[in-house]
Image (cartoon, rainbow, N blue to C red; front, top):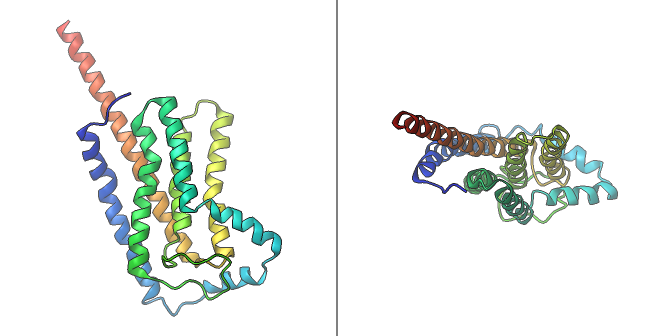
Amino acid sequence: MDRIHRQDGSDLLTRAVAPGIALGGLIIGIGLTLKGPLDGFHAEEAVNKDLAADRTGTWNTITAVWSQIGNTAAVIGVCIIVSSLLLWRTRDLRLALVPPIAIAMQGLIFLIAARVVDRDRPPVEKLDASPPTASFPSGHVGASTGLYLAFTLLALGIERAWLRWTTVILCLAMPLLVAFARLYRGMHHLTDIGAAVINGAICALLAYGWYQHCTRRRRGARAASARSAGHTG
């Protein structure tokens, strides 16, 4: 197993963290716009009201389960298990770090944006106890999007086609289930969901992009070393 080098950390800062800071500014800007100039635009609340009016006991139960997919404890637990399995199977620490980096980045952006924007939740009955964070963006959706999109990107490297595409479809479905559940249960506006998807998706892409860059750099270094050894031999 290759060790993590200083260059890996430098690449992480320039290729993931720095763009992540810009992403955080974008998310906060969207939130302040929704709470400020667009605060009087209530058309999206019709979605929450329609879903609340059509609630049933069965769907209340189903969405309660789906909502827990994006719970902090569930996301962290799944991340630890899968990343540990990836490390065990591949012996590639950088690959195993992709999901943790993705959810850590989106989580930090979510916490800062929620505190700065401080948007009220939809004016409907809420089926879950409201966490201390505000409505924008959705933490559940952002976390599940970041985690399961990271899994999706890594799953593209699975050799067996049936296993690859089964994994991809299941992983892409997870954040969609969470998004619907959070809307149905009255916890978020539609734009809270949209911003969370952007947050989680871009963080996953940045984390995966860092891994790909590190892989290309290491391969290039090995090729250069091999050519040098060939010349000296």
